[in-house]
Length: 289
Length: 241
Image (cartoon, rainbow over all chains, first blue to last red; front, side):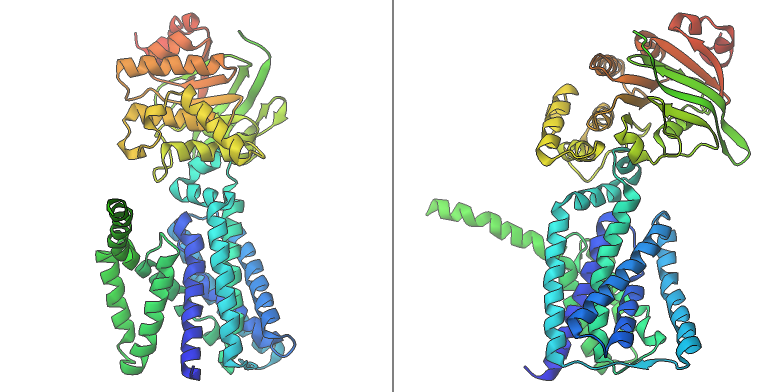
């Protein structure tokens, strides 16, 4: 594989991780989070500070833990907010962190931005691939667990869930933190791709919006949906940015509007029924033979 | 019928803005009884339920369950301590089947309920509330009476000692009301103490051992159905003369 292909694959895996992480919390609960960029940036800055001290897997672990702790603090405060208030707060959080890190960086280190140790493309790719596999395993396990069931109940009716004994705040914070872990770990790994980061690069709100677009475009009801959406968008971003650098956000927007209008269950919703029909037909044929 | 006091509220106050929805209310619940809670719309009945179940916090006063303070606790804790409730507008989980609705209530309603124990409880509750014919049904396709029965069943699946029933008979036809009355009796016979808010007087008068009347968020009267229905104040503000 050429190094371009490896870099492209790492980007695609990164977006899959962001989209799945967003989806694992926001889809069942209905709480639309725009905090992804905050957790991603926390991971990036973990590597920016500790990059020379630790090997990549440990950096990812550190980035994950820091994002996780951030999510617990933020979640405990804001997950009492419902609906759009929660969304607005999470959006504000990215800006808040960006400004805070910028202020702290200049105040304490007297420089704006920092150089990041770079890692070999292949190492980054494998680390991201392992993270993705762990994330998918976690999603499958959680969906079947008590935690998964209680999240579903919260999404269906939060009051009813609380009154049948679900500790709604604890469940929401736990899931928010778990989803933030993967995002932070991904940020820590991907930071090695930029040789220089500053708060503006690290806490870029695009990383909050893209996963939402990808998950909705692919279909939020399954695990395959966000993966499909992330692959399509990551590839689109790569091609559009080189071919139509000034138009690519407009094209993204149009695709998104089209997806919401015509594909309420995402592209997976479009593909699934005919595939399911085919599968349903298979055993019957065998019986006839 | 009436045993010792198991649930008690003292001097409860809850205001929304400047308005006292519950204004220095005292109440008590005896073990094993069915207590009816009546009063005109806006009297504070549902607010009182919200205070007991922890959906709202009290401004002042004290609620105790088996002598233990429960005011200030979260809904899930109060549920696990043995108080279940239904909502006036049924709040079932619409995306789940009837079976899943009950299973999840059984799983979370008490501490440490394992998967198989939850299934046993679910089967038991389905039989108890006669929901067999709805098991696989979509909630939205159920008739109102069925949805309200499921609302009660969900509360029962948490294995409560006390059940708060909020207007479970509103909107039902007379034969459905009779069925619902039968269910309330059956619940009470199984050892669960009940408080019910209801406007269907037939139901209140026939099942409740004791009735409490609220008006403008205050205690107006209390007593047996006979006493309450002959109380001049109650007739004036609620029953009509």
